[in-house]
Image (cartoon, rainbow, N blue to C red; front, side, top):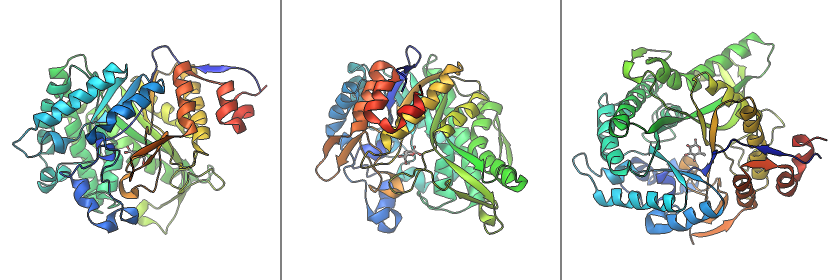
Length: 442
Ligand code: BGC
């Protein structure tokens, strides 16, 4: 094994990513809390409950963990339903709470990246039709103005909306997130409304804070044809990627939302990103199949023999990270990897996954692709939406009943990476020795 270090550029942001509903606890005023009350909606009837008890103050100890882990950044989100508990009411104490949290990040030299919408909506907004409401962008813009005005002294990097494609598909096509619909046309309408909302938020933020850096955390799923030589497999792979990956970011680049059913002009969306936020987790094989008309005549599966995460939710496909970055380059923006990680309670796969995905990120850095940071999903085990507590993505283990945290080896591994601003052969030898020859051949 060769002795070497994969260095990252000076000033690279190293963080972990979190979302309000998944960590705060007692988020009783949003559509997710309501959804969780029906046990059939969440695996094993789990509930978010206290989550990581950040609302009870445990953000302090977790930010200490992030800082002790040599991170220089942290991604959090703010909860709309706390800030605006009713259409005509703002909760200043909630805003003060977030100011305190942001000060907490600054005091620990952690650069904040703040998401304004991460899957959860106030109940009152859901009752008005949520993202199907044609006025949703105006309602969202009001919330954004109020929030950004209050928090702008502490935040430069904003994510308006987390994974619009995942949100729209899970909530309106697969029926797994509230409101639990399975309507393709509505899904595309929601995606269009989210593009409008992003554009409105982008301009509102810049009006309040001209120097802000504003983007979206885009989820890219890497689709590869089951048989590369077979035109029908290639065809459906392309369609899957266009529909899931491309519609939203292309809308923000061109000002046109082009879905399979509609074409809407949103001129104010054109050029409405200052950086490209990229979430990457896994890759699918796609085969043409007459048996799956509802899934665009495609059968998606993980490559047989691929390493799978603990519950089989993700396949470890690190080269997809590189392909994700190559794909993101078309938008000609600086790139932040805003999420990447794996569910693994025993921390067997995580060190391997982490080393390989960072190696692929470094490959991209070496081509001078403009990658500015990496945020690992996630810091401490948290509430994983419709999968409840059955999946553990944390660098730190959490027992939600006792609120006890326990460090996984990957937390130490990541801390060494952050301190070094790079990935060295010694670290790989120590935390993921099975990769030594692959990553550092003699
Ligand atoms: C979401 C996170 C989620 C993670 C792992 C991402 O799609 O943004 O909220 O916890 O995946 O499931």
